[in-house]
Amino acid sequence: MTATIAFDAPNTNTALSTVNKFIQNVQTKFLGVIVNKDKIQEMFPLIFKKNAKHLMDKYVGYRDFAPFFLNLDNDCKADLLAYLGIEGAKDYPIIEETHIQKLEAKHPAITAYGKKVAMYYLLATVSKF
Image (cartoon, rainbow, N blue to C red; front, top):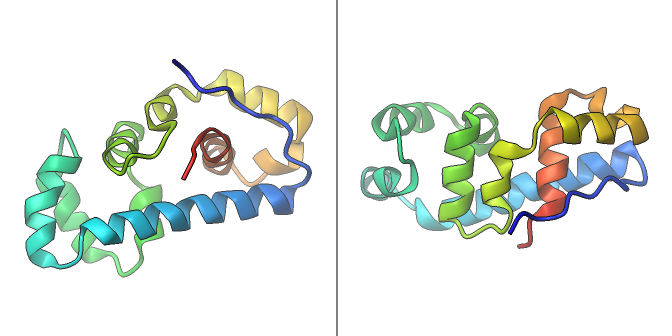
């Protein structure tokens, strides 16, 4: 069953706050799984269905989780979110242009920050932590 997409963000600040909270929650859950370098080697192949070694090397190079997460492709984000048990994860790859256009029509300031912010806002509204 596909989650319902909400388009009723009151303002840009609320939307950005929602996105930030969503990414922080993902980070908290992720860091609970990846607690040290030994766990990285053990967990990445379980989390990511493709490119686990490449992503592991990439993750080790980042000091902050957010850039790592934000630069994952949609399928890898969906894999990570699903592994962490985040509701709505399966919807991430299908939050496409149609949904972004609807959000932009109602809240153009949100999408002015870019399509990634709009996609994270939409995902955050369908995800339950």
